[in-house]
Length: 121
Image (cartoon, rainbow, N blue to C red):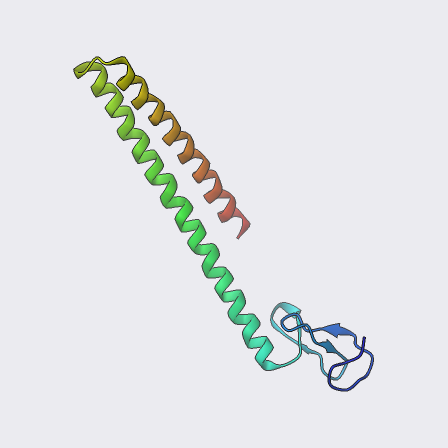
């Protein structure tokens, strides 16, 4: 492969745009990744910052989903207990209890996702 500018033998490829680079063209970018220009380095930095922001939002969303799942599970358990004492309809009691179990299980699942995302940082 030949360098895009100097037609010399390429020793690297720009991590952002994919151009072949010779020894004269190589500029170390962020985190020792090879880039061909300051524009590619700046674009790569912006892309890294955008990815970090997305990962923070995913973690925040998983935590909020776990909280709301636990909240709905508790409310459904309360509904099952209330249906047991005030409206002794077996279907309603079992339905609310089943919903409670599903919501609590999903809260555990979202909580594990949040912990895994947090430990991956």
